[in-house]
Image (cartoon, rainbow, N blue to C red):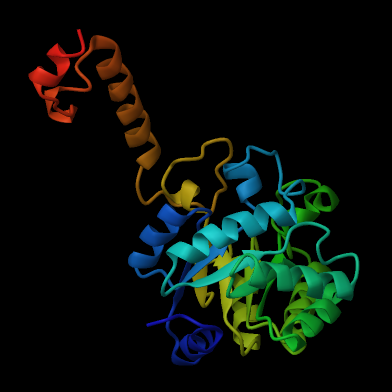
Length: 275
């Protein structure tokens, strides 16, 4: 069944958990989609795991459009949610609507995601009013990593926890259909989840959220530059890939690949006429 903002809301009401994974290309999106994952996030995490940046700040609209379009071509049932990159919506409501529209038209996304609470509520409201579904993102918001001073758990003090709850209610009021909670204490995430009518998607926010999201390279052991505490490796594909690459290297160098079974034949009569 095709996943939409409506099926997300229905899952919340029925108490059914939602699954979300990142993907950045057609082939991976097809595999994620065929596995039955509810939503594919084309995250600006591609700056880290695909482009090799130290953070997500340098990711551009063109990067997001390029990768979102590829993912959309591979996803048939999953809801494709595309991140709005740094400074594509913070500058003004107008910029937010225009850039969200580009991600939908050119990137073929089914929804967009942006970071922030009350301060971006006007952008969320305007984007939703333009007919574009919005997923909000609270807690540790990577685009604000320089303000936070690093990858730190958010909402641990009374003031910070109250603000997180207020921000969650603000983005719901503005029209967001879901909200990602990243690096938030589990009990606080539970309070937020219980206080909202829209689904919460956790990443480092405990298992009481309405759904979960992970970067697929993290959960497959393909990215080892930095592994957050909240990551569980469901397979060690990175090691399998390295072993396969090394085996290929050996086979090429010892002449065992390609073998006769990999060759194309030609008549000896044709070859003889060439001399």
